[in-house]
Amino acid sequence: MKDEFLSWFSSATILAIDANDNKQLESLKEKYSSLNRLSIFEQSFASYGKNKIKCFIEEVDDADKAGGNGQNLQAILQQVFDLWKRCKTLADMFMGNADSSSLISKNLYEGVLGKWEIILKMRDQY
Image 1: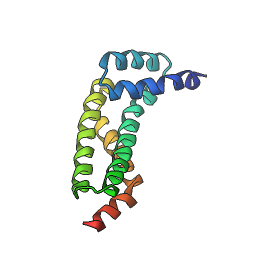
Image 2: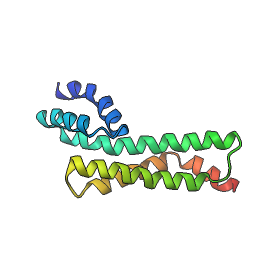
Image 3: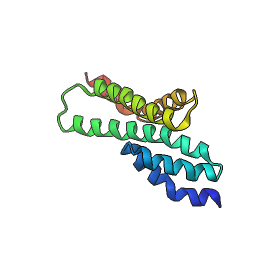
């Protein structure tokens, strides 16, 4: 029952992360905490990064198909670092533990691996 209730807040959590809305994130954290589901809240930071990098790789691939500039792999690498910094900063504020870096890194890695075929194709083009 708790998880069903919280499922309504998952989109709000992702939107708050995307908007860097600390006030909303604090409010959402309290809701998750009151239902003893902080791990789900914390996982949202990792899932956000994972999904963002996958979408970014797809966007870069689409742009490349439309006549890209050959900077695709560099752009992807830069986006990975930017997402890691952004997600880690927020996660550190709201998770308060040393695992935030590894949680974010692991999920970004999984996101990149999920689009590895696109990356290999880009590499082979240049």
